[in-house]
Image 1 (cartoon, helix red, strand yellow):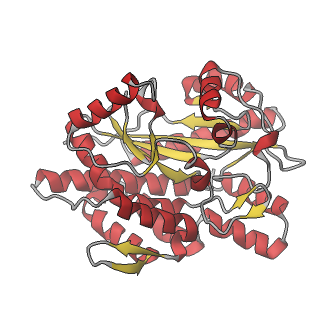
Image 2: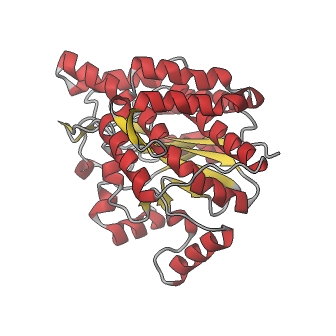
Image 3: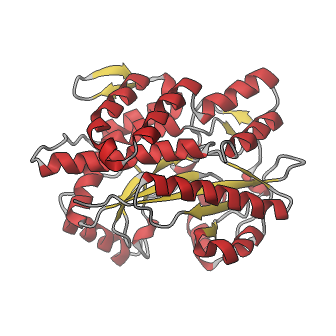
Length: 365
């Protein structure tokens, strides 16, 4: 039985406490973190982004401890630079045109190739790795788990504003990121060799130089023995990150359990799953998604409750019942996008929205 280890990466905004604009940390947070956090803190393409990642965690409790610790640490490092740390999928009003790119050969190559799509990609996500030692099972997982991506994404939606405008989407981050090639819901692969041949073809023909240039919403990691979920917006509260990561781990464990009992979960076309992803981006928890089995629209909240029922028989083995049940609290209080919009409706002031994001980012720490 695999251990279903966890690794969680969070991308934070570095914010000026006076103007509430994004402000470059000039890699000083990363340099300051080298002593205490070593390789767990990284610069990203834009200088107002800082990424932190846990070590390999053997259960959700370890992951919780690390995520909370890393948030506290990165806030302390930011404080020393007179900056604040915010957790949301986009900044409510800062413009990408004003944000410098981190000097780095890798980022230079991406900007040279992708041009404005790269320069404007000022978005913040949360990635979760779940350990899968067998690549054949990993490809099976990737095929199967695609169905659940819109449900997870709906819970994470936290980017309703872009450059000072209300976009009408609960996640505009995903619309910005879709300008990149090799994003979105992946296609179906028949086997690990089928997947590897696809990657090799892209490398051989100069489309990519390595498998990390595949930016799908879920991928079998090219270098680690993990399934990597990449669809989620950066969520405000550490508790929200942990809850969604716990559900992601539980889904892997449940699909593995079914397969080991010779029970297969039905695999659906990417084009159908994309319909649900669009609905999740537009409406978050408040819309309907398609139940492909019943061939009808069902309220998204109801489908998420069904998802919790689906994984219920594995969460105690994983020790994650408490974390998974936090999803009920998330549905009660609304997603980050819902809460941002609520503050904006009450105040009409996007600076107050930033203040709310900052307060929620440190909630419970």
